[in-house]
Image: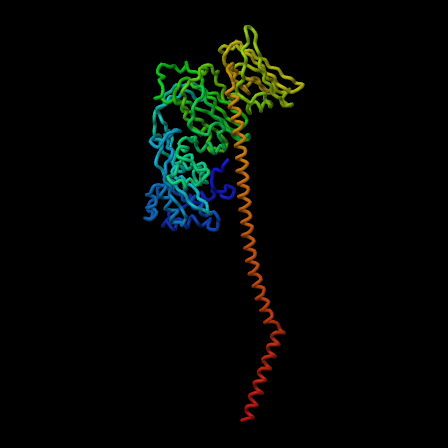
Length: 571
């Protein structure tokens, strides 16, 4: 996955410098020049000083939004009277940092994927770039300093959230603008920023020509929030924010590192655009659950069914260790157009909580591994008359859990449970768990495998759930293959990216070594020159040299006297 920022986070750390910037006093702000000199003092010899200075401008502008300072000189007041983008540019200009204000369009708060420039969600926008070490860096000062709380698009009906049917109409609200410094927007990678803002001049995408996108691709691209990238997620399903259902269904899937997914959780909200369908006569209690949530050890998948033809909005929230705030935060918004409803959507079983459907870490923590299926759906043949055709699922059990854990299976919910038969058996010799299920009638049910630790647990807990269905699962198998292919592509991309990064790192090290060698050569030449001069001086000052010089001078003096005497005799 691409790095979030364009500076080397192993070399450039802002914690101490941010603290230094925050301590600026009125005595340091007697002029713009004196302010910049204060910012320069601790980083004057740093090879990344332009990045640190730009960071100082970013943090100082944020601090000045919250701290009113009186009696500032005219040149500083002149900067503070500008909007934040042009104020940042003015500071770069004063510090002789090469910079550019880039103009274009951006996705505003009301934006939904698939909108064009005529929609209110697209806004005219500008942002900053500056140059350091021959590389351009992007700074979105507005998004980095300001955020909006309590915003709502309105005009939608919330059908379902976290497994609960709501049928609640949302109202439009502009919310409140607050100061909230967000590091994400400082030196953001151009390959990420292009999801948010599109420059008028394609050169300012700051991407290689082969990776630049068109305006149409910009509009249809996924609408990600910063938490998507901070949580290190990547899309496995179709990489677009505008989706079309197939047979009344839609699948959205994300991948993540196996180490990270253990500590991540997701929730969702499914809404329907009010002006695309009439739901006046529908009771929320009559609506089925529409979203099947299926987390696994390295993926998060949402299988969505639609009861009526309409336009839907699907929003997903994530909780992850790298996100600085607790709770779940919105990370992706999709617009889904359904032209044909799913005839089977009313048969979706009850919500199974955060465990979701499919094999995941909850089952692994109880010692299960190597499930016979990686899909959350299990196809079951409906028996004839009184016969029940059983379908079996198998799992390997860790050797240290065979005697410690007790496993059972049941059906989630109480409605029509008599139509399902389940059987659970542990093969202690081979260390396997066998779970069989069969259905007497057509339909869908949630099979839940439950377990408890015999030593400590009094009650059973749900550790893995599967959707038993008599409907065809061919589409699920097809999606499984697509996701598997996408995983391989992303793995290859990641390897190539790491290879390029390693190459760049080695190239930089070689340049540093060559520079060091040149410096050593120069130093050696200077030392050689100094030694030569010193040796010459030693020769001049040596006793033998001095005696020889004295003797030579005496002979010359004697010759002069003799010559003078001869001339006197002649006279």
